[in-house]
Image (cartoon, rainbow, N blue to C red):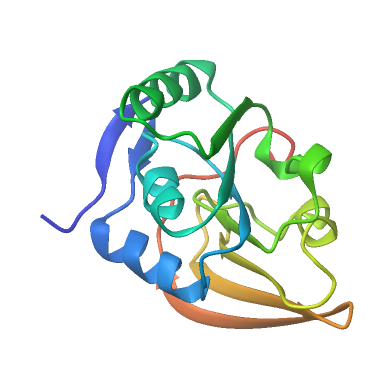
Length: 165
């Protein structure tokens, strides 16, 4: 069925259509280094790991991160690195990233994420909007250090928690 499902901690796994759409919007070629914000169940990280060389994923809930890490490691994924932390801040240690995908909705695009994509051709796919606001799935590109953004469709994601609260 094409709808989100609860995974605990008040979080959900996105509906399959949205996972596919967001992955398509990243325009992956296979050699990218990807940062995912919001590991959740690990499903999106597994999809990405099948396509690209390196996936870095940040989850604010330790229980979800550890469960996903164990599952994906047991399934043989060796190209995913896991971190428990506030995704608002990204994962600066491994920046810059070719692309960043965000699976929770902040009320604005976190400046640290804009700083952590490559200056030429870096991309972010992110739902933006507060918990009681309309959210828009955005595609952001950095070309020559300049930011260009485009609204794709209206969406409803769990809110980003942590710094952006």
